[in-house]
Amino acid sequence: MPFNVDRSRSIISAMIVGRKVTAMDVAWLRREVFADGVVTREAADELFAVERADIEKAPEWTDFFVEMVTDYALWQARPTGVLNEAQAEWLLEQADSCMTVAALATLVNVLGEAHRAPRWFLAAVRARAQRPWKGLEAI
Image (tube, rainbow, N blue to C red; front, top):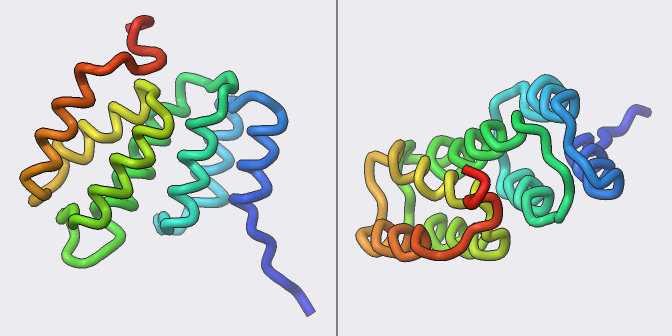
């Protein structure tokens, strides 16, 4: 009797333990884990776990991370394109736990793509843009 293996957890754990995310890891995640276009809350949490980890990340990681988290926050629930209060709070909490440029880019991207978001979310993102984010000095 076959059983399903949660491949996302396996690859996420391997990346964190291996202390780096390669371009091949990102390609594998796109092809194998997220091929169906579905990003669950658990998967989004796992992506933030990688972003929080102090590990080497290939340049491809940032675009992938921003795309997948935005997809989860805006396009996986109905009505699509709407960032609700709970999602906005979750997103800010996750970004604050990372304080990386990729997390900040995700906040900005969600604002840019959202058809509607809580009014306070824009002010919260603006306030966070003034903070020191890891990696911002390299840009």
